[in-house]
Amino acid sequence: VQRVDDITVASPLQDVADFLARCVVAGTRYDRPGEWDAVAGRFRETYLAASHAEGEHLVAFEAAALLRLACERTGRDENHGLVRQLIETAEARLATGDLNG
Image 1: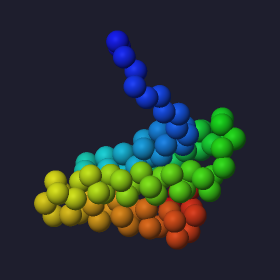
Image 2: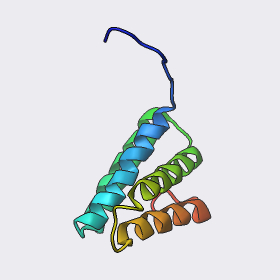
Image 3: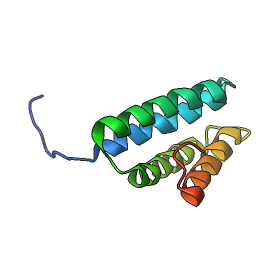
């Protein structure tokens, strides 16, 4: 790197939420949602225990990551199944505040 124009510091929850959202994508794409839900659940549980982060904050970050991925895929998903799943998952997270639902 020869030149750095900006340095941005972001919450680690953004990266955690992005991984969790991508687990939803993988579960939907490979038609194995249960397996990917288990991966996400274990990761979420481990991260929250190790970091002492607030679960409610992770719910908000995860919903945002899900909606961002849905927006990115809107033009690429012909049957809109993945986009629909991402939006429904984000909605469920926000409606219940449930880390696992």
